Length: 133
Image (cartoon, rainbow, N blue to C red; front, side, top):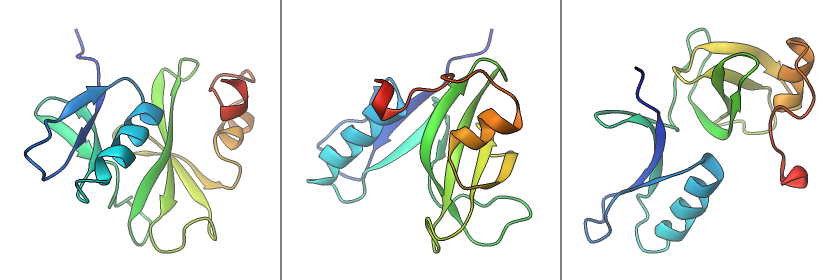
């Protein structure tokens, strides 16, 4: 049985304990709140003992480093997918979509998960946007 992966908000301020949170949006809110007192606050993803950072990611075949800007569970592809933005060029260049091991799923992404929906002929609404929440 595979252990469920979670987001973990952590940092160097030992006065605040690490904690798990349900999803990327909740983790990002918690990270921002925690960053007010701990500037090293960051989000990790995985299982205890096997967490991965969601920033400073190197993707094979691509220059520079990337960071996660959105995460979605795609039941139709049976995977969790990550939308990555380049650390240097941000939204001025294409994004990438990877699986949760940061293996490339789709390149040349300009419209977020909508590009994945179109490329893989997925049902509309498989991921939640801010407007649909």
